[in-house]
View: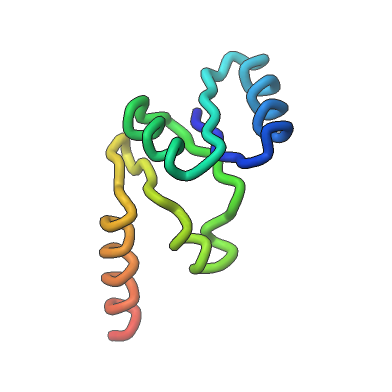
Length: 90
């Protein structure tokens, strides 16, 4: 699991609790390090501190994401969002 959280206290608390139940955890404190870690380790789950579903603007703040074991970069996410907007307008 990759935790992306800019507050060290929150990140460390989550890490301790999850490791206590046997989850392998990595922490990234910013988007750049999250992208590097996600690309290197291909985590099964990424825990973000902002919900992309709360507002479409939050999805623009995500620098990349893992989908079925494959990394989608910011530019790939932008293409998907643009295609969704075009399809929605039909």
